Image 1 (tube, rainbow, N blue to C red):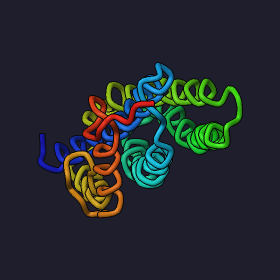
Image 2: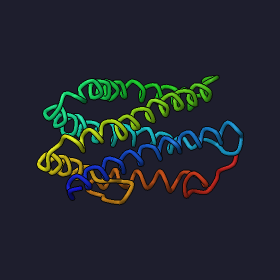
Image 3: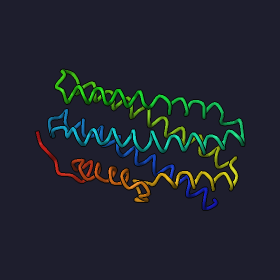
Image 4: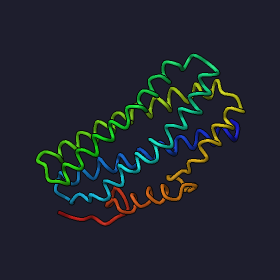
Length: 199
């Protein structure tokens, strides 16, 4: 495997892991809150939603659309239907994030039933995301490895290299890298590195 191909695929997978880590933390925190073992840290939860909006939705997905998907469409029609589905999912993500914001805002305002609503919204978003990432990693990337040229991989690696990788510390975008690490630091153990705030 060429260096550019390896670098591009490693970066894409690392960004997927970073997104998965934040979503898993959201689910874990809500489970602890519902069990009465901690209070919800609203600023932390808002930071998690902001991270999903600012990094995967505004940086990661557009790079997939503009480089990985675009180059693969040029090389083969075998992936067209899959790419159509993945791009539709990318476009639907802002609506899912708005749902999370609405329920979190309701919970912060003390609206009855909002904790259950937020937990369901996060669960739905997590399931949507796991299916999306699985399709990209187990269906799309193997097709890309099969059909893309070394020049394609060079361009894709360069594009994704501009994102920075908050999971492994390639911090070209200092604000997002700092936000990711702040989320991990403030999320109570054992989900993160922070101290538990009991209710």
